[in-house]
Length: 372
Image 1 (tube, rainbow, N blue to C red):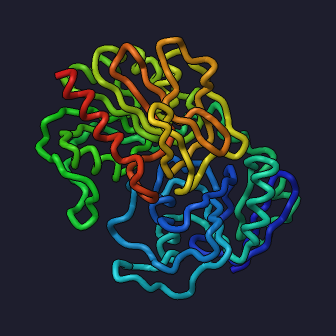
Image 2: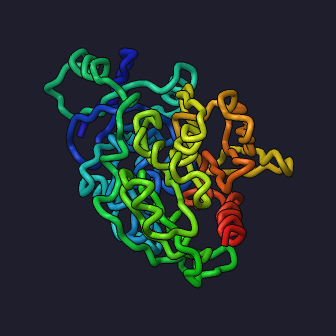
């Protein structure tokens, strides 16, 4: 089927549709990961976004039952240069085309993703529409893109969080383990689900955590009633300024229990400490971002998916920036000097991405050990 990607700047990109038919609006961003498209598709942090993959061929490893990072795909569309006509992987259960049909996600291929990525890099993230409806004119679709209010100020967390608390017990499978397993359930961790990825939960469990996942609106009092040894703040989609209830809960938890935040959790912790957040020009999306750990002058290659960042100039004196992005020097991690709390902007769980940052889970364990 014929399809179009049309941006708010008036540009029209013609291609071949795959997955589900439809017309979907979203914020267009690019991802520079070479592998792991199934994990990207099912990362709830992409809710409301149309993801452009810069790797030239996508779909050649198919999809499988184990690599979903959440209960469904939450993104608004998927853009690739070349959709592989062949699925060749021993773990594959189905094709990407069939998978997107089942997920009700529209994809478009045969797009010059290099030119599209340069446009987004130079001009910033843009509103866009993926459309397979040939009855709509280009101008009508352009207006849809321009009239869409966008993601700023929108609470997308409520669309991805769990409905009720649940226990997580699955650890990283032995075949995929790359660090010593301490799976004894010694530490009770309450994990806020702002759009949590399953591999984060597996890594916490593998490091010896007995994990209870709670909805995003859970109050601090409800969390403390569970008598946790630590609280985890998960990744998630959208504008961190749109979830003040989460910020209020973290403010109340600070100093009571060790806290570890990732991605949106990092931004929420920053706000709870008094800092502001701001939108990046085109965000960081990919499995190959260089981050420097300032205390040891060490560089990690890391996986990212965020459009917002914490403004380090607004952090209070008792908070230090521990990590910076070497591409644009934005804050990628922070630590509270006088309380057991720290966070990072990127993803240490390697789904997809490298393992460089996995020791941060061990750092969370050490905080809880010291507190005990």
